[in-house]
Image (cartoon, rainbow, N blue to C red; front, top):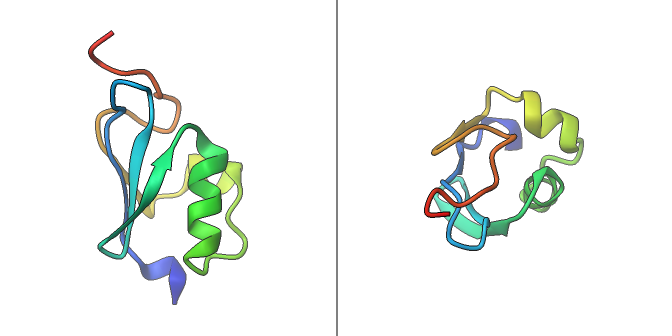
Length: 74
């Protein structure tokens, strides 16, 4: 089941993008909750939207939660 896949969102890089890993595979860089939701939909979690991403306990947010998208080097 897609909702059982581990999801990790890494700290923002110098451009504010955050790598998104789903079930051990890097799917890309997200620049906001909408991007993370799209990666989850592509991975098979059809109901993922921005609200789900912000509230989900499924996601391991590293280097800041769902509201943090700025590089720590700024």
